[in-house]
Length: 482
Ligand code: NOJ
Ligand code: NOJ
Image (cartoon, rainbow, N blue to C red; front, side, top):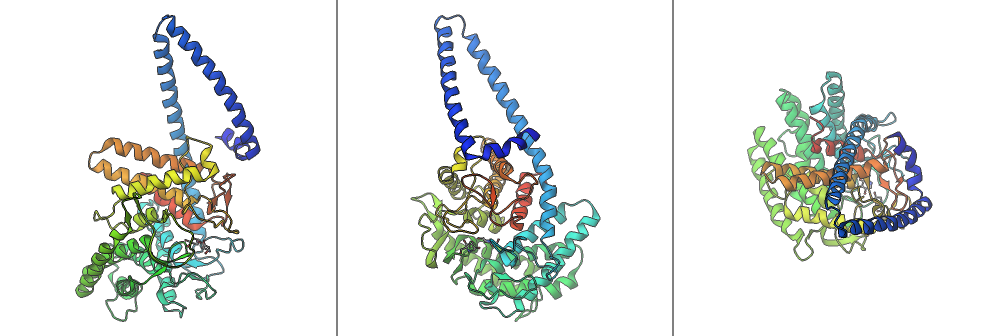
């Protein structure tokens, strides 16, 4: 481990790497010579046993190396878990902000991510619920719970603030004031994601008998609603057809990610509404969810074998010609409603993942260096956003973690129907993606938004909150958080 850490800066240095590649080309020549020697031995028919023996020896060696690799990964995952939790929690309720605000990153310049993004915050608090549910220590549990109450209250204050685009407003200052500079707005995944996480929170509170709080602050059955979930569900159910900016804040149109999260918000929201006796609303939300589902067919491109990111392009960046995007993986992760529609192991989802894998393997130089690590995945192939510049996009930590998580969840679905070999392959694939993130993580375990496509070093916003949430979520999917 220490040894590897010591080597890491050397291995990332492009000049040294070139040098090493030359050496390895030479040593390949050497092994060819050895192979020729072996052929001679065989021809002289001394014995085929020699070959069999060396084959077995190298197989044993290989699996021992595999095992050591797994142990190494497992060890890193254990340490990284504590780092991720600690650094994620640091980004909730910052000292100079309102309670319940979640900063996207502590970075205040190059790039400035010191804001509460509705999307990032919801995905973060979703991980906090997972932590709450899997924590053993009561003191930890109450810290997580307090964070959730604060987030619910802050979210309601965001809803009633007067913003440029209403509930689709994507980001707020940490004191709760809406950001009113030029931006890609509205982003209609926000209210859907907020409703999903708060509905999960409401269900948890209902199990604990906190019905009064839920009916007052989270879901009040009133129209217009004074409660955060109901207000979001009304917005989603009446406006899901509207075009909005995508999760990358770049393209105006209809997006797979946004639609999947809207569908899930309405399905989960309908269940909550029914549980609380708001029956008419429950039926209405569910009907809208089915209508969204009908629209989802438009995202499948059988000729290309992929689910595309956007239909009905209406503006914004115009160079995303492939329409291949890791947003589809994220859409399944955060929008799958557990009802069989576009689940993780759906062949369309897995063939999109394969395509992402192939395309990014070719695109980024760091992916050409090691075959034992999984492919570092970016947002989409044409991406130019490097955090501070716009000349070349990089692979992203949260995108690579998404590829890992989808692999684990698909494996689980295959296990449930007895498809063992597909499951094994996908679990290995998931671990390879995690090993990729491990390799490029900072030595102190912190994770920035991106990995430089040439050097592999962490770059762009440091300590991206969403990364830590994505890591916790991937770990949960792997079966490491019980
Ligand atoms: C900042 C956004 O957050 C990022 O996703 C985008 O690529 C750039 N702005 C350009 O719109
Ligand atoms: C840029 C990403 O594209 C967007 O999805 C995210 O919300 C912001 N950064 C903040 O992390």
